[in-house]
Image (cartoon, rainbow, N blue to C red; front, side, top):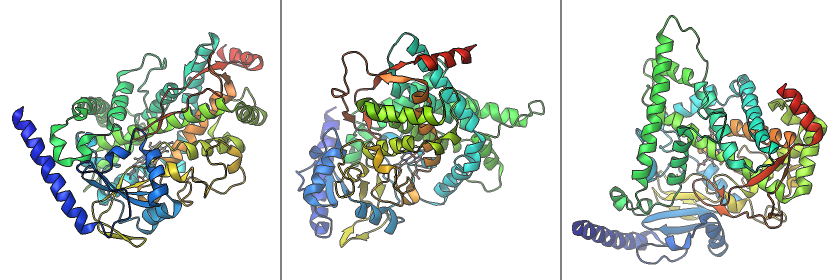
Length: 508
Ligand code: HEM
């Protein structure tokens, strides 16, 4: 124990010493930023909600600033121009990723999509996702499946509506999204239909999301990584291992089925596409390295889509007139008794505006994922040294009065006659990022969120639990990899008489 303490002290001393030396030799060229305190730099300034603290700091130090976070030099971009310089002008140079210690603890971390350098293997992983999972043709092929899952979500909520019991919107959306992804990848449900009795799978994904999102001392002082002082690696590693075991079972069964003359049903899902790739000569893929890809997709998809749905419902419940307008559009255009289809969304411009406005105020990844400079880069008159961590504060850009009138108000109308979209071309609005590291799952996420939201708005009116009023609703954020609602939204679904009749007929 004493030896440990001695080692920690020596490491901290050397880090402090070398940091000061490095800072002195390079600080002239770095963008401006707060003077850090010895050892921790500006870590203490991040607070529990770094997206907000960094937005405040950028008002003092400008749209491109430098912070020393422990021993990690970090550049933060907080304007559309700065984001464009990083994600478009110098896209290639900033396309690296720092890998958090908790993420690096998974088996074969080099085979992920999100946590590797943008090299050839990464490119082939992204390519197979783009062509075999996210292309319009592939997405259209599986839309019946997503529509079925959306109806299961409605049935789940209906059980609550009968007794006027509140629904945990984020939890229900999370379970639905997990099943949507597991059906797209494996053609099976990973969570049972009764969302309340969650299967092990949901808890494992949740454990990884929770712990990987926590600020980790090891990431700010890499020299201390091995010590895992907060025990995050110890908590997260078993969840990774167990998920790999679950994937092993599914993959082994599929390989047996594919090799058997008796079972002749190729599922045509993403797993089949991956296994086809594994069989190709000289392929980058094998049954071991496809597991981190699959895991990345589950993790990236489930929380982001669920929390966006939850924030949208929270904003709607806070603004009953907007809720009413959104429901009127759905019921007036689609009807109350028509099962919601993905193709219906084109006819729901107000709902689309609600989703866009939700992602402006509550981007699921408020600082994107961290980027890393692959070499020294000259950025708007400054030098960003190789290996610098680069954050883009999308949350701050989405609330900047320079681009948005009345920025903190939820006003979907602002998107009604606007050409802004999600594609990463308009840098004042980039909830999915932009450039080569932009979210590859965006086409699926858009479909899933609109479908879930439209389905639950069509089938139910919504009210807040007794004792809560729109004015009193808590909208506090909880920061992690994703920006959750700190207090989960509970809302009571109400079946209106005309809808009740339709639902009863459905049941018969
Ligand atoms: C509301 C839903 C979603 C939002 C807001 C979102 C947003 C993002 C953002 C901001 C990034 C990082 C971009 C960057 O670093 O520059 C990202 C990366 C990623 N997303 Fe999404 N995402 C969503 C849903 C999905 C879905 C449904 C999937 C897959 C099924 C997915 C898969 C990924 C992957 C694999 C990456 C890593 C890409 C890379 O590093 O090359 N995301 N996402």
